Image 1 (cartoon, rainbow, N blue to C red):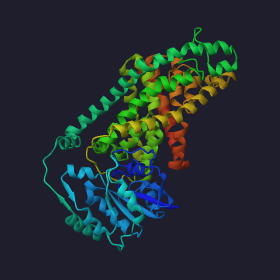
Image 2: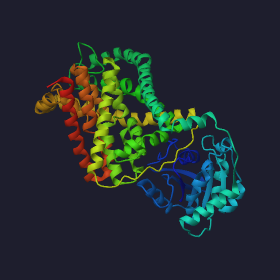
Image 3: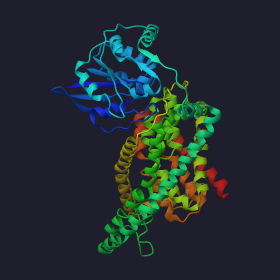
Image 4: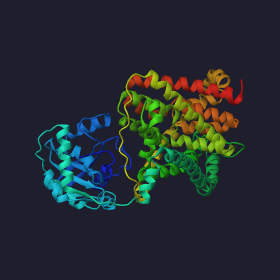
Length: 570
């Protein structure tokens, strides 16, 4: 079976091209580094089937990070290469194109974002470009599908460019000649989009705009989430309550009742405290977490597809460089706010081991996933938005403090940022809806089995008396050092399996708002969920993963104790 590999710079639309060619559902975004895992699909090429592979974005065949190393390895497997080029930035993209031509692999060039060239006053003579490159050159618009029939038809006619290997200097000289011959740029006045792009990248105006965007995002997440809960999901669960009570009466007292329905609170079902698979097991993911998940992923998709995230990365470069990374470190943070697993994978695009270790450790310590954030909103929201901001403030302070310390003790280099900033683009509502649905579906597929298993495990451990024994064992630490009820130990232990379930368990302990703040912070810091741990092991290796684990435990102990002394007194 032939292998067709999509190659190109970051943020040229390779993932959207892949989805168009294969019909596969992959996440595409308007910022560099979206493709951090390898996507594979199948297409029919003539009378035979071919495998098509979406390689991570790379600027050169001389890799500077792990993602680019993977791209170069995939090139060696390719029978045909589709070089996806940003037609609005032809000069920058052609360097990789010339390198690919030197590999003598049959190739087709896709001039993507062809519609944007007209908007920017760029005119490209594609026939002349095809003659200069000696390979098929097809204009495409990945978002709309324009040009894909021609691209597909050109694949059987892919050919080598017969270009001899050259030096960096020679490639740039050749690029200069090509651009002079095939491209003409007309003068155009600054549009509103151009002025907005300038305003959001300049520190004087960009930083206030960034703060406003982030605050507005959190406010919208809470507003959208609470609206869905109050007007849609709470009525659904209230209508379900009589059926759940009928099941409870039919089952009668016993182990099966404890597992499926849980404990009756004051003779009835309390969705937050009963801890049954058909009560708490359904209400936590659907009634408390899912609304905020929907809201977050809608906002994240909008920020991605408009092109705002790279600007935020540039604005925060000075801060992140002091923490041992560079501005790209904001992207794993944003991804981690949705789910720590893709956030952890996004660290691959950082160049050095030091940067990846610091980014992964800080992500695990101080960046709550959206499921956990939704629970924080759920348990602290009734006490006032100031308590949510207090948790956020403590986590930010922990992230910064730990980063300042780690950059001094972790050996290695932290090179400067090299990130291309794409122009602002009008997002596709269809693409945003599709992306949001894919992410929600992924959350539900990953969360519900763990939540059901967690509820079952809690009931088994509770029936066996193990939870009570562990609570007694850790009571001096939980109560004395953290200032929390001894029963909170159960939630801390369950947090390793599912943080959102653990935070939900805190509601039954009748704690004060400040105690809930301490518990939420400690749960966030001390361990990520087991799925994130598995990814950390794969990305960092056993040695660095164990180091990160020790840092998490130390940070949780120190921060929890300091919050106890500060908020509750000795």
